[in-house]
Image 1 (tube, rainbow, N blue to C red):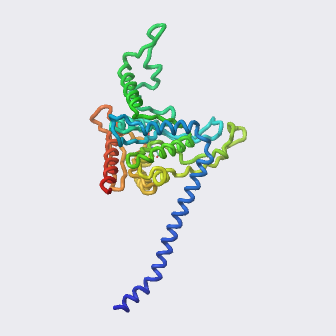
Image 2: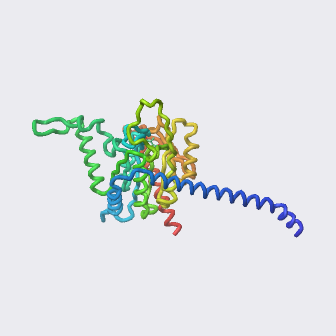
Length: 348
Ligand code: PAZ
């Protein structure tokens, strides 16, 4: 018997050393990957133009997060909703830029549903995109909603009075009640610097923090230092430009910036054949709690929430006029967030 064991052990020995080499190489590869990512991230932030008013933004965030009126009670949940697309400037004194498509509707509508569900929302949005409580207003609210009453004043047109009153009332209640903080960005540099500041302010909230990352974030950028200062001249012929890859901040957000927060990212594709596969990859690679997969043309009708426990299809309720897919989507994610918070208290 002993001989049999010895023979088995003897024959497995080379295999075991082979396995340990393979495991060693995988771990070493992962270590090097994360070291390279860390370097890329540092170099991105070091070379980015400094964020204007970063001290003011930090103060606003701290006040917003700390403020809880006694009637609201302690332990309120805070979600950071990102919305709209980031731009990539091609010149330092920017005339031309690359843009990422997003109207900001998803972020603005979701913000309203999160506030309804009792969350405080940090709305990190692209300047000029859709805003919460404005969906019933016409495209140019100032010019279309008001009319001159007499020489000394103007008034709301009857046709828009309900939309204007409702929008102003709800927006004021959310801001004055300490439930909504709006922070605008334009470029990829501003967006990522602000996201990092927000994450560090939300760190202390631990599991009560949520990220709902609906913004369309650039994958490629021109590093600030290698960017032309002045407007690029067309007289010199076709333009050759090397774009660097934007380092994937989702994994540092999850593992370093706010490791306890509940993180939901979005994946947009135009080819439905690869959508779920790409969303699954993002779920695993960036350790997201959920990834919302959506296709460009149907994004307002349905989305698929990809989780470690399977996929959930979420659709707009077509029987209700004016219903939005963000309504059941936010409801589902709020429930998942509650389970995530409860799981922690059960394991204590
Ligand atoms: O802003 P919007 O309502 O027009 O569109 C929302 C969206 C498609 C930008 C969003 O749902 C999304 O998928 N954001 C992530 C995009 C990406 O894959 O980078």
